[in-house]
Image 1 (cartoon, rainbow, N blue to C red):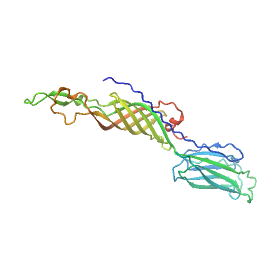
Image 2 (cartoon, one colour):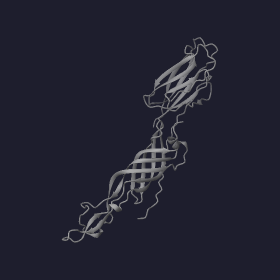
Image 3 (cartoon, rainbow, N blue to C red):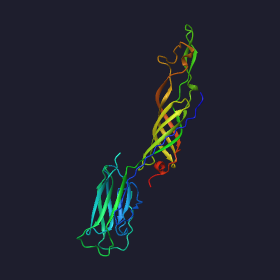
Image 4 (cartoon, helix red, strand yellow):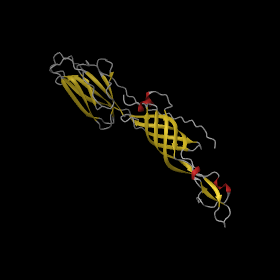
Length: 304
């Protein structure tokens, strides 16, 4: 049978964005470089000099978190965490401490993330009736924490090797001398050991565990049969992935009511055999064929 080349194009993208705004005298918020999965936010009130910041985190529903405000004056400032409604459809940063001021200390705010919130405002506001901290230079500021789910997907195409091989049947003379004609015989030695095919894969991974993507594949073999694949993958760099797991597809079978050794009514019985769906093993090597930038390649590049 002539093998046909099949081009599979599967484009999948996941985009998430949430507008964040600073609230300190028109100061443009700066992006925090802290680990994306850390449950602790660290802000140095004295060193940052009132600049607002944006922190991006990946938190699960119910996950506890805290905000450590270093070198602040709890007696003179008020502190508040307020959730931002979500759109429908590691380690803390080390503080840079300057000359110590006796009145300054650390204020820790704690909270528990709820899935209805897409982020949080952390407000540091001076109390109107409190004595100031001498020579501290502290001012009002607002921190913005943007929370994402952390799920990423990527697409790739490649070659697969599976155990979905067709049995080989042939006609043999009937061993019973009293019955003329032929019987069905199996030729296991001529049966392929593996079947080759092309497939397109979608890899789903949580950014917190980027080295264990789950692969879902759709492929076509040389007989133009559709095969489905599912299993874990092992990335090599940010493009290539070695995948293994279960292949679900069709293989040839004998007609209903017939088995090896049975007499055949006609020599054409084995032409155009029917198929049956079975589950076998597979291994695949795929490579990202979609050039869409970080949105698709980040799952295999680790957390930034």
